[in-house]
Image 1 (cartoon, helix red, strand yellow):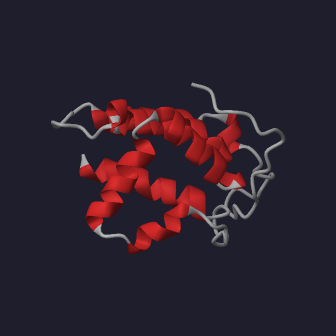
Image 2 (tube, helix red, strand yellow):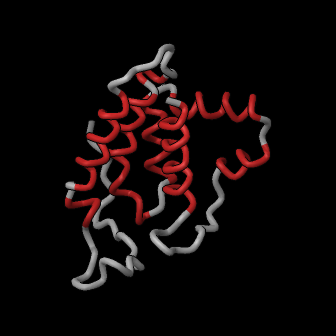
Length: 140
């Protein structure tokens, strides 16, 4: 299950640092840059603080995800609920977790907002940026 936790944090990192597929790294000041230089113990404390309370987590990702990845807010929130139930790590192995994560990812791929803005014939290039038309709070 550590691999699912690592995958969660990798997706999180990409969503706050990059402008999209093949995109450039975003030069936006955020607290996550410090994570590269933290000791594993302090980094763990920071990450627990980031996912501990759902509303705090939503505030972080709502403010810090780049525009391109904004449609993933709802889906990253749902992954957080699975990987960190109640804001905590799993205390024992859950064999159903992998299938639940697959389900969340599959449903995200079926979300029109996530798959939006791919111009006809441009699917393989994927150099566009997602432009939000309205900044609304993600749903539950």
